[in-house]
Image (cartoon, rainbow, N blue to C red; front, side, top):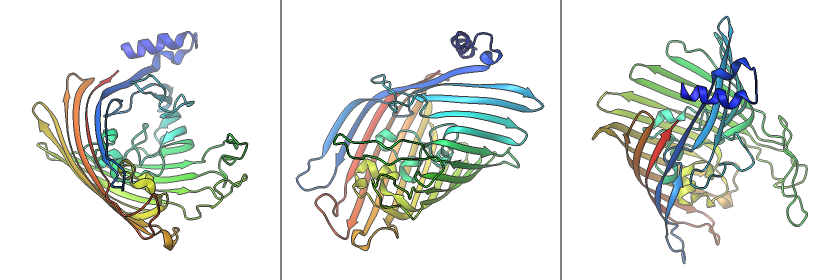
Length: 397
């Protein structure tokens, strides 16, 4: 009630006399904690790096948002979500220059399901109301700062929150819900660098000068069983008017993932698998975290993960492992061939202080194995590793 009243008061000045103001909810998350990381790049003449910091959003990204609905009658509703991420440790926006970086959508709901338009997250990631991949991991998509083996640490996420997106979900039938998404990409003017040269190309929405995105997925929920499936592709830009990065990515990306969970009451187990092709190495966040994304090429491979959660000492305990095995995609020249392996194991604990506030702790260890056919000064055979440890406090409002 407080949330709705506060939002109504805040909006009433801007929308005096508006009937829908009372249906608007202000909500959010503030997450702050301490994070320690130890990274060993396994490079000659490069020391391991230890870092201890006050860190925002270890468990969940801090955010605030407004959402609301209006009942149009005959089972039809219209609604919106405006959600903005911020850094609680310094007060800045998560994405500079973009107020509602996590979601800005207009939604129509009825017996046909839901149609959403705007800036929307892919079903294959965890940000925004459309993210579904967290169903395959006990950690969901949380604790990424500590490099915990969550869903998006192990699975490739080719996109995050997308501009100019059309998304649809069916009504639930026999436990199933089906999702479809298409992003027309971005419209951006070409920019110049400090020397006056072109730094980027012109991008035109829904044309070959911008990346476009397609996804189809489904979830199933029935008692203790929850399942997830998704296939997606990025249609990479192929036209560059300013000749910046003018080698087109003619081979589009593909990911296919499935998984889910089963609740045995005393323990809930999760598992998932993904196949990916023509995906940039850095699109698997775990590979980036340990430093394997020094390889800027695209890869083909698979990822596996398994985890569990169970009641523990009045709270909830978590454990998970993940594995990635990849090599160069067909679009990569034979002279740049590589093989990558990645292993991660994580434990965590969460204790609820109330319905809206919890404390948490996580510990994770990850190791990579990179074998490059042709070594260079910056990329060569190595086995980087990372330890992440975080504790913190999260409050929902």
